Each structure stands twice: as C-alpha cells, then as structure tokens.
Length: 418
Image (cartoon, rainbow, N blue to C red; front, side, top):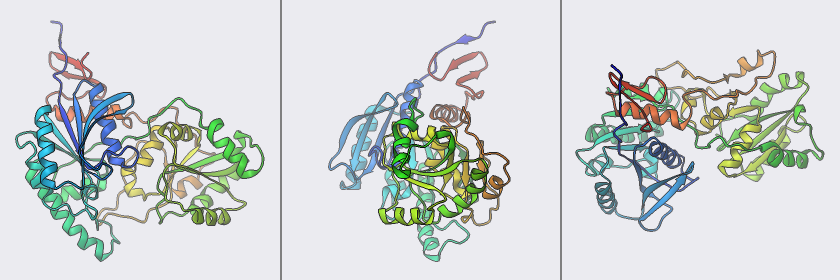
C-alpha cells in the first residue's frame, strides 16, 4: 500500500528573549533568524523581547531577516515587570502558541544577571503551554580558576535558573555547549545539544577586491598579490586573555615556509581602542600586517569571511561551541586556530567534539602545508539544519531521519509542508 502523504500540522511558536535591537544583541539576532526559519518551514512564529533597552515604549513591529518578516513585540526595560508580563500575555494569547521558547541569558534580563522571580513571572505568561528552554548562558563561577567573587555571584544566579526550570517545567531543554550540558546534568536536568548557527548568512559577495585589498594597499603602501598573502581573521570581540603574539608566533613559521606574508584582519564590532591597535601594530611590526575594518554590515562581513584563509578564536577551547563568531567562521568554511586553553569547567577535563577543522598551536605547528578552507560547511551548522533539529525535538512522535523529511509509519511529510 502506498504511504499516505499529508502536510505537517503547523507548530505555532512564540520565542521569548531579552532584546531585539538588530546587530546589538547576539541572542536577539539568533532568535530572529531562528523564528524566521521556522516560518519558512511552515510553522508560524513570533518573538517577544521582555527587556529591550533600545525602545522607550512598547513597540509592535515587523523585523526582516533572510528575506522573511517576523512579527515582534519589544517591551522596554523601563516598564514595570508586571506591565511587561501583562502586555506579553495579552499578545501571546491572541497569537495562540503551541510552544513558548525561552532563549535564556541571565544578563540579558538584569544588568548583573540577578533576575529574581523570573520563573514566577514567566510561568504566568501561558501556564498551560509547553515550554522549550534554550540556555545560551548559565551562571558565573563554573571554571576551575574562577575567583571567589564570581562563585558567590554565580551561586545566586544558579538559584534563579533552577527556580526558573522548576516553575516552567520545560518539556525540552537545549544548550549549545557541552560544559553547560555537564553542569545541568549535575543538577539532574537533562539537556540536549542544539548547535549554534551563524548570525552572518553566507552571501554571494567578493570581500577581497571590495574591502580587504584597498585596506592592505593603504597599510603596506603598495598593491599586494593575493596569492602571496595569508589572511587570518578575528571576528567581533577580542577577549583580553587572548594573545595576538602567540597566534602570530604559531602561524609565522609555516606561513613563511609557504612564501607568504601574514595579515591579521580584525573585523566586526570589536573592543579594540585606537591605542590598543597602535600597540599591537608596534609589537607585530615586520611580522604581520594588522588591519582593523571596524563594524560592517552582515553582507560585508560575509564577504570578508570568504576572503580569509583562517579564523582565529579568541575564546578558550572548552567554550568554543558557544561562540557566535566561531559559528560564523564555520558556516563560511574556515579552518580555525584556537590558542587559549585557560578556562576549564571544574571536574571536567574533556574538550568538546567538533565537526570542523580546529587546530591547537601544537597541531598547527605540526602541519606540512597551510590548511585550506572547506567549500562546504558542516551539515549541522546552518540555521535551517538547527531549526529542523529543534522542530523534530518539539514533535517527538515524528523523528528526523537526518534531512528535512520526517517519517512516521505511513505518514510522510517534509518540514515545510510539501
């Protein structure tokens, strides 16, 4: 008997995050892209921001990402919490979600991450609706060498998070990092890994001719042959613990043996002051050209990422899975050098398993030739793959077979309803 083919019953999702200021809040950008992908997959979705510091009063608007418009409600942090919850409850009631997905970053809801009574407030939004919880950040003080101040601070944050889980009773919990999964398991909370996708969509643009070539010409005083350069890039914030000199010392021997000149490219919204850039250029003079492109549009950043040869991680190796910058590098096929291993979860000596080219200094130094970029990113790294994986988790009776087709006995349908 031929299988019965039917469209999927749409899953209506309401996402809750702290802010939806485009380009200024990483989790907000992530949430907007994820909600848009659910819409493209046939599942109506909306987003409510409960602590948006960039709007003076409640704002109901459409925000567009990847060509898809999403209905969002932005509630300012200046409102009372009771006012925000009441406004969100009324709006969500009109939408009628099947699930509410909380994108949790404690610091997004309070300047010190001490969002007391958050669980009680959120539980009153839609008490009979299934909750999904995506944990982007846990609490402070988890590292082996965390200062006492952070451990005490983190103890308060831990109580808040555990109370939130107790009150919401989420049916599905995800996190993007194995260390967080380990911490939650110690609290008897089962969480699955949902990989972080890039907030920078891969675009069909040329970042070399339009952006990097003019800057390198200006920095060196002459036009450079692209084939004679090795471009290594840092995207976004530069963690103060990261050493540019260590990265250069690791790269330079193989770069010079390959008859190339090393160029460090700092692009995106970073925290480098003009004085810090001057010091860096002085330290690396004669060994590497230093370029700082500054803030760019997602389209321009995609072009730069495609022009690079290597990505440089400024995060420690154990936390590599929670870096949006690394996710962008992965989606653009870059091999990545991670020089930091100075943060370790207490009681856990492993490092996360990754599906991309990740090199420690020792591994890079042992290479015979410079690593090349991949023409295709890992299959699980894009927003579509992540959305489909989450959709399968929200519909446990319809397990995913690893593609965008879900199968259940005689019922076959695709996630976009075809």
